[in-house]
Amino acid sequence: MSETLVRERTVSERTIERTVEFDVPMERVWKAITDPAKLSKWFGDQTELELTVGSHGAMIWDEHGSYAIRVDEVDAPRRFVWSWVHEPDVAFDDAPSTRVEWTLTRREDGGTTLLLRESGFRSDLHHQQNTDGWTEELAELSGLLAG
Image 1 (cartoon, rainbow, N blue to C red):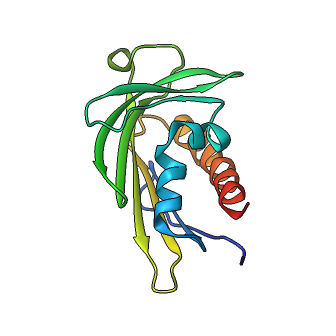
Image 2 (cartoon, rainbow, N blue to C red; image 1 turned 30 degrees about the vertical axis):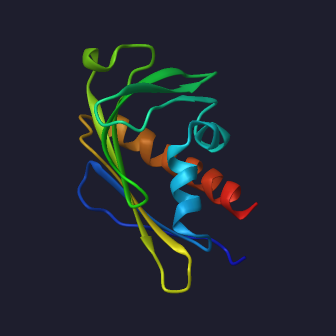
């Protein structure tokens, strides 16, 4: 399997965008970003998620707390969108949120292109924290899919 390619692009000061190339089928990437058991292997320590638009769940890190999410869009296996709060251990409606968009495209060679976009940051600090966080998390996703 070849090395995973990650491209970063500055869309605006407070938007994060990453394009990642995977040499695995789109359905496998879809499962890794939507199945709670798979998500918990690379993104946080536990995931509470139901793939129903409007449902609420959480991304949980033992060291950082529980971050409330709301599912905004599900178009399997192409597009998944959630919004999540930046502050741990608060209800979704009690804190500002950002929007995370996952768009998958099947490549001609059978691999998958993943476009990740997070927007809606209210501060430079939150934007920078998540910029660094996505670098780490996407590296873990690459490792999971390479195995």
